[in-house]
Length: 123
Image (cartoon, rainbow, N blue to C red; front, side):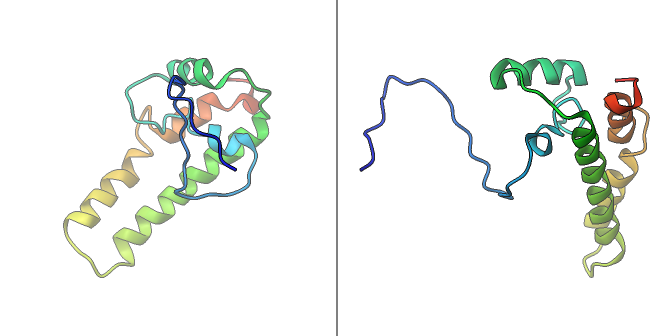
């Protein structure tokens, strides 16, 4: 039997059903501090804000680095597919090209992921 929700409970609970998968926490945390949030915060600010709500957790730096790099490669592949392998034209391809090239710009997600990669002894 389901309990009646407490209307005085002010917690916010977010459920992400976009791509449900059983995976280590590092797969979700790859966005935090990796420059992929796009909210105008530095990677350090992202981490601070995230952990304020999430709480401290033991993070495997190798798994975190892997998931960040994997996501960048997947995004690049998707942009290339949109540019070259679709029948759509014009603005879709121009936007995909913009997203593709932005990965390689100074302070883009590749550079941020590399700088935040604690396995390199730099992050």
